[in-house]
Image (cartoon, rainbow, N blue to C red; front, side):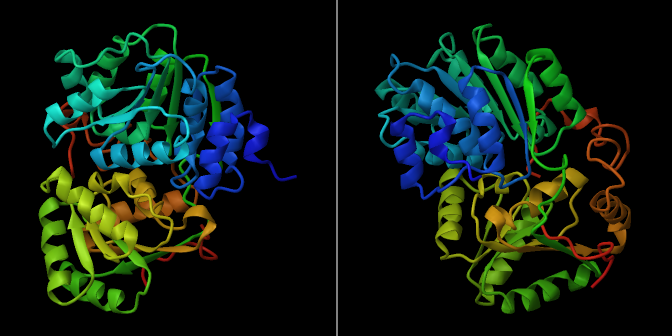
Length: 402
């Protein structure tokens, strides 16, 4: 029996926004978490990228806030400015009939612009932790009436070193509040955070933990570093769908993006050295189809929410298995098929082995798959400071080369 949004207990005003967004039926994570959220439960929602987590927490928040007294009553914390913008846009679309004021707080733009927006009205805030703390210290807002706090992409947030900021934010919120945490992977740091702040939370897990969508096929290509650009050019000439290309360095993103544009491809790049305005323009061009090929670093790509990305190309091998999961989760969304292609240079053999092991169910991210071993692997030296920027499976074992 197909479950409808109407059966989940949402108000008619919110349902109108859902229909206007073109949604026909809830995804599994929405079906299972929304009723619990409306009952007032603390929640841990675990699901692969593209499983519909934004609506899973966004719709019950809109339902609850609509018709209540004005003022900041819900807070959603996200790891990057791109995701901040994306989540806010989604919630404004879902809540178009509610009259709620939904604002954002992220770095890279004049803080006074955000302060002015708060003064015009603020019911729900989507924020990056660092910029939110800036606003709190300036007394631009208060969290004393917040009744719901959401951590979106909690695994990435903690991996980027935001735990100290999250703790500072939590102590500014009322003790009696509802906490929801959504994540694609369950790292040890996420487990610890849940144990400390939401010990009675109901856990809803969709699919195997940290698994890749079944609609994605995986391809690994043994290659030298000097041949990567040639391979990429040849690949893109055969593609008529969007391609998202991941690299590990901002300088590589800029260089590769410029090269692709120079030879005539509808391509661009996104990374942390570009201004917030420039990154927003690049994302809009990619989402609209004006740009079909986008080169991105891991952090800069967190706000990309496009359903018809046909191929994810790992130009650089990711630094950890969970990074591989997040990257390829940008394709194969909403039931569509997708392809993940990873270029494996000689130096990448160890990480390639870890990725293959995970795809074959031999390991779990967060338990030694990072270089350096041990939970979290990159070492504590990289945590707690400034954030870094850094399916359908083929039959049989995923291949080591193509």
